[in-house]
Length: 88
Image (cartoon, one colour):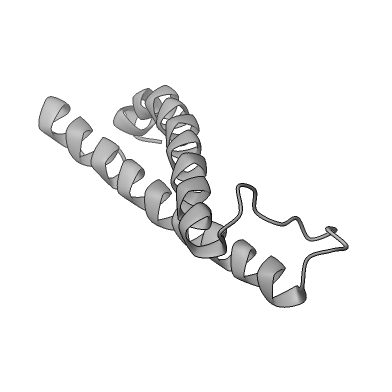
C-alpha cells in the first residue's frame, strides 16, 4: 500500500464524517421544500404513503452520494496539491 494512501486514511475519515453532516443538513432542507414537512418519513411510518417514503429515500440517497463524492474528490485534489501525489 502506498504511503500517501496510508497517510490519507485519517483525513478521509474526517472528510467522511463531515460529508455526512453536510448531506444530512442538505437533505433536511430539500425535504422541507419538496415534502412540505419538517421531517422526512421513515420506512416504518404507518401514516405516510409508499410514494412519500420512497421519494424521501431516493432523494436522501442521491444527496448523500453527490455530497460524499464531491467531498472525497475535493480532499484527494487538495492532498495532491499539498503532497504532489494522488492518495487513491
